[in-house]
Length: 246
Image (cartoon, rainbow, N blue to C red; front, top):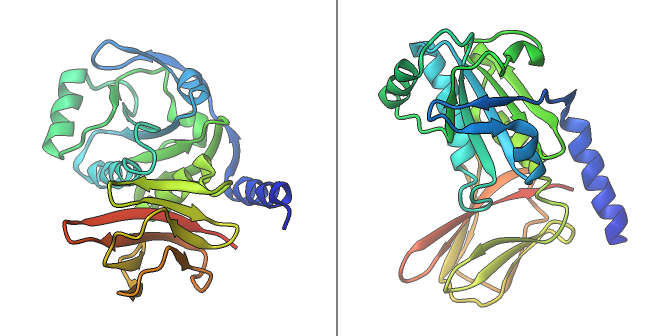
């Protein structure tokens, strides 16, 4: 298939699954007094995950889902997915918000108590409410209350990053550089210095493994979705994520 046509199809796929909404820009100071402009962050190629909280105990679970989803991209896209926690109606002060974050082991990139970041811009209130915004300023996930789940947030981040539009360099270790070629459904190794590999679904199910490791691993047999591949060397295990799309 012509690569330009292939890339166009992937872009259509991502556009189809995202919410047809453009994010509302804001400029607001966080609880450390640092000014943030949403569109500037997005123009730098970042993804922004907003999580509005009351804050309250039940809100913590949704905030934790959002944090876990963001942190799962620390290796594949370091520094490119930003996590912001926002007080729902800007009626909790920053000392209280920071204390609440600490109580639930939440460590967002920034915390806000500002009416300038309004969840009603995204279809109404939720406790909590999570929105994923891509670099093109489009909303790729919009969830609230008990509808929020970690996998859906991850999928929204994946779509916003459009991670399968080209061959992806998904790792670079001293053992090897690992690439994922979605067009040919191959995971490729620059050097084969691993002893074995395992592939897991995002839910943790082992779907493939082998101690016979070649420089190319065909993953055509996998159904579409997000996966984690582990390469095992004598020294340690390396885990990387990839999105398989037909």
